[in-house]
Amino acid sequence: MNRIRNIVILTGAGISAESGIDTFRDGGGLWEKHRVEDVATPEAFARDPNLVLRFYDMRREAIQQKEPNAAHVALAELDARWPGDLLIVTQNVDDLHERAGARRVLHMHGEHLNAWCTACDARSRWTGPLIDRPECPRCGGRALRPDIVWFGEMPYRMGEIYGALRGADLFVSIGTSGAVYPAAGFVRDARELGARTLELNLERSQGSGWFHETRLGPAGEIVPAWVEELLGGAGDPPPL
Image (tube, rainbow, N blue to C red; front, top):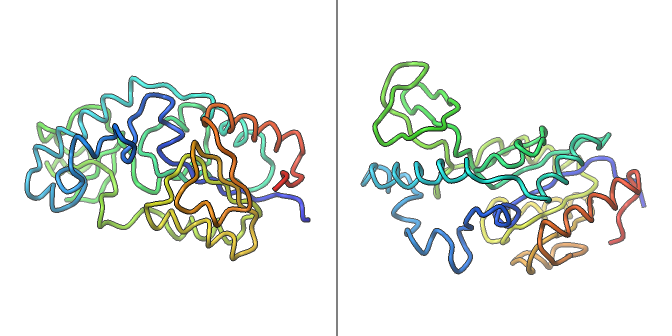
């Protein structure tokens, strides 16, 4: 078997849950408190912008009180030490990967700590509320919205993601439900392109059948163990 050089890692809500960030799809998740249609679609924003802005203002404030956990730290170490290509594609809109020290990170669903001006298309770092309709730092308009990919909108930088998948020797999914496309289809794409595939998750996902191996357990335990194994093998394929 060829040695592993290029890695694509997909992370989902499960990796941040241990930092105290609510997941959207678990029993106590956000969707039970707010319907998707009320807070996470363009139609919801057009219908009741105050509700949507208040919801995301609360989420933006909350994530700034959270800290990266052992899984984030382990991936940051892998990012720093891995000599080949590596891309962490995250479905999460928090900044815990970056705060742990990771640099090769792509947020396909946007970021809570960004605001998007729909008037001039600028994206600005944003840590405060949007409910009071603050001015855009670039154009001065008052058309800022959360820089979040809502249901019905196209995820960001898909060309880069598929380019990385085409060159990957190993695709790893961490803490994902396997329910949200297009991310749920990445494992099938990677496998059909010849990559080895590994799932690290608290429980089997809807797409577990596509992985060569699934390892179950808390992300804060199984991710550091896998990273140690991979770095210790200096690029030799993990046992799959």
